[in-house]
Structures are given as C-alpha cells and as structure tokens.
Image (cartoon, rainbow, N blue to C red; front, side):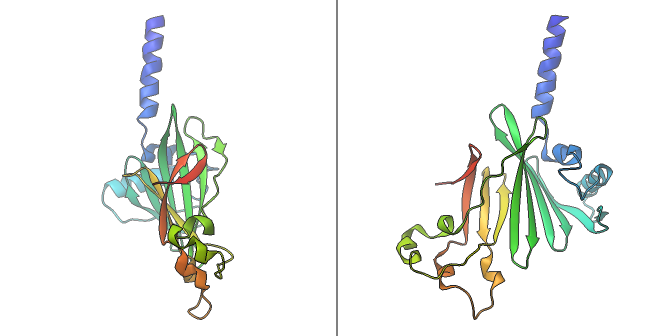
Length: 204
C-alpha cells in the first residue's frame, strides 16, 4: 500500500507539472478571471482549437476570444480596448501564473498580477519598469537635465520562446505632437526583463 501511495503521489506531481496555460486558464478561480465564467473559458478554448473566430460573451456582456495559445501562454481579446495574457512561468519546484491585463487609456498600459500555481495564492506584484529603466544607457547623462514624462504608459507581454517579459513604452500615444516631452527621445522603445526573486531585472 505504501508503494502504491508513493506511485500515486508521483503521478499527481507529474500531472500537475504538465499542466498547460490552457489548463490554468480553464481552472482559474473566479476572483482571478472575473470577466470570464469557467464554462465560457472552455468554449473559448474549443473555438480556438477548432480554428473558429467565434467570440464568447463575458460577464459584462462584451465579446471575448482567444487570439493566441501555446503550452506556456494564452492571450485573450477581452474587448476592443482590453486584452489579457495568462502565462505559466517555471519557478523552482512550483510555477508562477502571471496575469497581464492591458487597456487602452488611450495609450496601451498594462498591469501584472502573480499567483502561485499550486494554490492560486496571490503574490506581491513587482514594480513595472519606469523612466530610469527605459533610458538608453548611452544617454543617461542627457536624461538628467531633459524634460521627462511624469508618468510612463507601458505595455507588457510574456514571451514563451525566451522566458522573458517584454515591456514596450507606449507613452508617445498619450501626447499630441505639440506637447511631447523632449526626454521621450532618450527612452528605448522596449526592454526585455526576467522575473527573478519577485522582481523584474533586465536581461543582458
């Protein structure tokens, strides 16, 4: 009996470790994905796997559909002005589920929530990169005296092929051509960062 119990425990662990982004998307608690009911998520997965563009009605009456799906990540168009990406990120013995929500404000702006894959407990959210991270290293001296934006709009996306988060500066879309801060020209358009120890660090 003891040997059978050990075998069952190993089998359960392997099964848990083999869960894909689609599995986590389907099984996420309502508090994590409140706009999409569980049955709706299953329909969305079926539609995508059947190469159908059929949208599903979310809890606010809008239309949502999956636009990308891989073992590591699922991307959802929640509405015309909002998207969501759920990504599964290896982290030692457990995995981390990252939920990235992006809205047009009108510039695309993202926020990231992190959960432990084992029990869906929410983790502290790491700070999004700001002006100091986006400044071109070769132009930091200029940035000290340049007129910089007071706030950055940043779009985030997880890249399964590299295991990195790509952050894209979308702040320019917030301004008219007459009031763009000169310092925006000193910022890189995007940076790739790694989630490590609960923080984002730039990938070299």
